[in-house]
Image 1 (cartoon, rainbow, N blue to C red):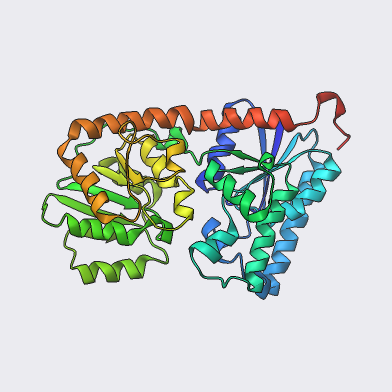
Image 2 (cartoon, rainbow, N blue to C red):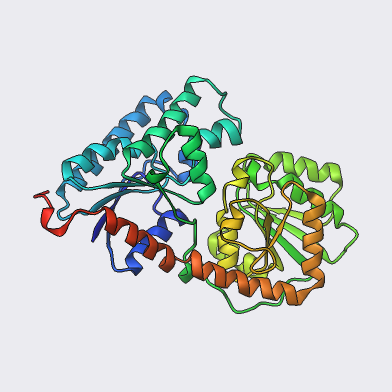
Length: 383
């Protein structure tokens, strides 16, 4: 089976690499047809609601689609056109090409632009033209695709209820991680003091304010230290809150190159997931959790319907109440004092990752889905 992974997606974004590598591990041919016009997926999301303000950018975008269309039409024996993350707008250009080719169109939806900017981050006013555009992009990018992927069943429920789309349109594909790159490493002696690590972008669903307040709860334990790596819109408010709380046991660190970040994860005593009080936080299992599980680190994350789709507290992680600093502090202290439990969770989490979210596993599940969509071998067109 030949898959054309198509669009203006970020070729280095972990989600795209995970799916591409997973499909290849399962024997599928994946041809990448990519014309990046964004600096990164983060840049693409940041500009998702204001791209029309730049005529020059619109011309570059149109030129990219022309090149992508030309490259796709030259490809022979294509079985599936696969639009990578983030491709909400790419789908509208890909759909006519899928009809010309006579092949199914698959879209890795991954998230809702409308929810990200209107509901979760509140940077776009509800009911505004921008909000309506993002709603339109979410709904009809999925409607036009023959199959749309989302990372949890809770996310699928949200798309069905919010955009009036049928559940049959969607399939779950966990975020996952590439075990060849993020796999378990030889155990390192944990740093002194006991290090609690949070890494990633500072967005509302992460619940940084609850992590910082948990640090305050534990300030009497001089051997527990919090390291927070990353940046984003919640960075300045988090730094301000840390000052107001007078935190002495937390350190803010700029984003690291991936090899350095992996070393930070490897040395950490515990890795944290998300604890925000947003609806989106209850619908996702974030990338950071999959990375930590893949690297065989003990994980604490918020107890949510999405987390329970894959994780079980006490078996492969500790789940604690969302938006509850005291609950988070108690969970951290439990793993600090019970190293046998921490080791059990690290090993159990890695086993759960390998069983449900490795590239090999996700690629196998996706290959089976795509096999059910592709054209019968005898009915391929000349294109």
